[in-house]
Length: 106
Image (cartoon, rainbow, N blue to C red; front, side):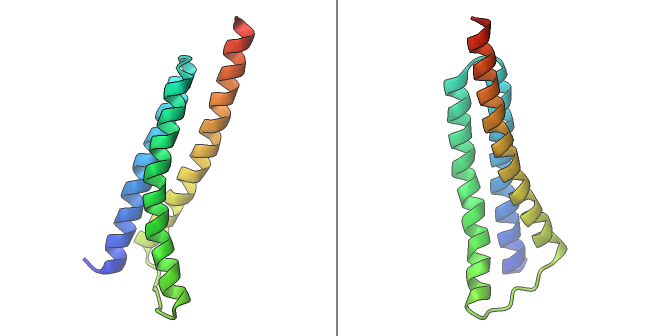
């Protein structure tokens, strides 16, 4: 396995865990456990940072003049990175909406 494949898998793995945490946070918020939902967001963020750092390393290589030849695996990794970011934004909104709903129902 070459370095680009390894970095791609590192990105995919880290942001996959992050996405799972964000989705879990939404499900937890639906049950009214908002502190736990926010903790899940933080857990997701810690994993997301690992994926982002791996991706940033590739960008730094390119900026330093080292050519990074993209392949389908890297494109998939970048797609997963972007989708994790989108899911986080949605999760934060879902948590806020559930908090409003819970406060209105009281």
